[in-house]
Image 1 (cartoon, rainbow, N blue to C red):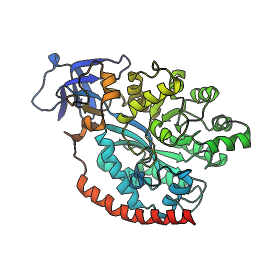
Image 2 (spheres, rainbow, N blue to C red):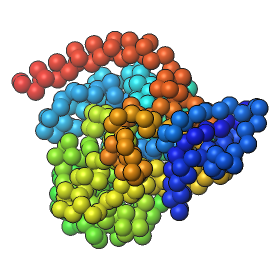
Image 3 (tube, rainbow, N blue to C red):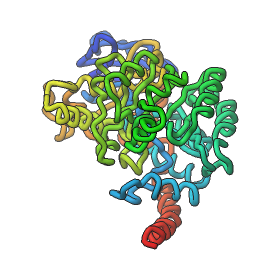
Image 4 (cartoon, rainbow, N blue to C red):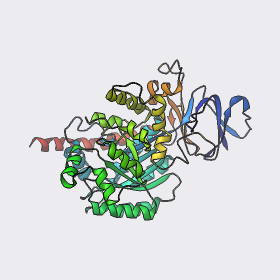
Amino acid sequence: MKKCIINGVVITMDDSRNIIEDGFVIIDGNEISEIGNMKDLKVSGDMDVIDARGGIVMPGFVNCHTHISMSVFRGLGEDMPDRLRRYMFPMEDELLDEEMVGIGARLSLIELIQGGVTTFCDMYYFEDEVAKAVRDFGMRAVLGETILSKPSPDSSEAYGGIEYAKRFISKWKGDSLITPAFAPHAPYTCDDQHLMEIKKLADELDVPITMHLSEMLHEMEEFDSKYGKTPIKHLEDIGFLSERLIAAHLVYVDDEDIEVLRRNGVGAAHNVVANAKSGRKVSPAPAMHKAGMNVGLGTDGPMSGNHQDILSLLGYYTKIQKQAALDNRICPAVEAVELGTIGGARVLGMADEIGSIEIGKKADIIIIDTSAPNIQPIYDYYSAIVYAAHPHNVVMTMVNGSVLMSDRKVLVQDEDRLIDEVREVSKRISRFARELDQRARL
């Protein structure tokens, strides 16, 4: 059955930034087949009609970097110095298992759907469990198996993630909603030899690579000491950089780094809230965007950014960048919406399929209720989305033509039952967290 979204303000995010104020969108199967003004609509009897009631109809948001299964650890070790090495790594190495990853993934998928995220890029362990959850929910995702220079939760040997990733890619490549990937953790946790092995495999298997890059001060100091250059320049010298790479964070980059990234086609996942919470300098994402790089937004994992929706990040992106530049003219609202939709699609190599409402593209569409007091009145739609809307204003989320949430009710998971599972597993996590705290005091 065809679907028709009616009575909406259609924010297309196409190249011309067309807005249809009294518009409709027809979906045939999993694709957008027609867009227009309500006065031209002819509804046939076999259409499933979705009334937007004057709300904003727009492409779903794209989260370019997260670790969704870490939602079960959300709120642990907050405000702790060097939390990654002192808290996160021990928690994962000694406690994480397949069940925990699956529960965390499903918890996050509900949050993503409720916030209007229709596509995301993930990197974590036991990524098969994430893929199963994504498939069950009907979400769209790039999923990368994490690779480290030490044993990891799903591998007893260093760099065992490479073999896991090869099996994972073989299993999921060609899936209509899941794009499998390699996910070397960072240039300071993977050596050059293995990075180049990953690059060769990614080229042979035609899959993306996602990695943290130029995120940590100790990373910058290490590469300056060893090579006399930045991680980005070093990675270009060894031939690792390419359009396959989705680089997360890119906090400590200069103009030369940006040019290196641009000419190699590297996509940037800007994690504005997670970076701010970690007390890092403001990433020059607007300069990357201006230079012609593909730039999207990411939340980072739920231990870092806590929330995983992109809608909340839009306002933070513009405000923090304006404050850092002491200039309120930069990063207009339309740019933030671009980075959260079609910009993110470009970063993930999916701009031909998603990121805008155009005929022939996949039907990844959300509706934002504009009757809520926090949004009214509206004089500019982009400003309303960026500065006024909240995730709870998203009332419908559709991926690949299937409605995953309607009238704020998630249709693909028993939410209450899942929360019970989360509370049960959190008891085990709490006990281990107390043990970690005791170790720290010794």
